[in-house]
Image (cartoon, rainbow, N blue to C red; front, side, top):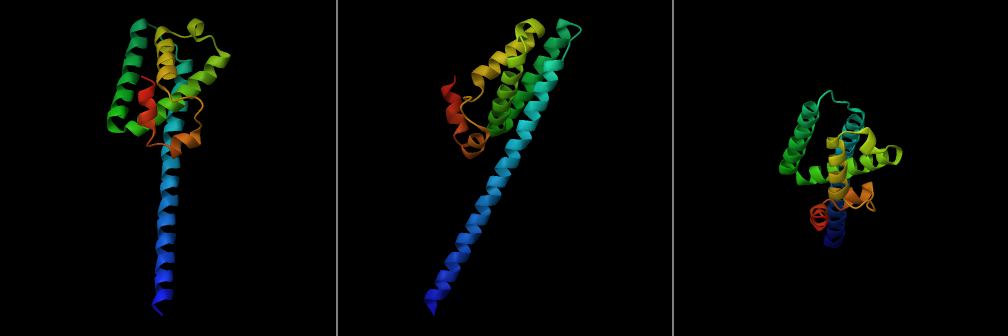
Length: 143
């Protein structure tokens, strides 16, 4: 009689742990989706910005840098995810646009930053989610 109870308890524990794991994956996907959407939205906005003065442009990019520094300090994982998707968006835009000709110095500088500091373009979205604990290790190799 004890063996069937042990098997039932074991099965219940396995199911509970699997349920918890699947919720964790969904949470990771939601986390990644949020920062992917934010990065894509920001990249689209930045591609269309037209500043009236160099001072306005410098202010914008200073604010963007402050945002990224705060994000990095508050959640390194969120920062790496955001930078990865920002890099992908910038690269897509660069396929269609000569950024050195049609964008200001700040945009070109940020494009270079994202290109250098974004994760390897060989990683895909699922890899960013699956290997989120690996992200800081990969990031340190790019420095």
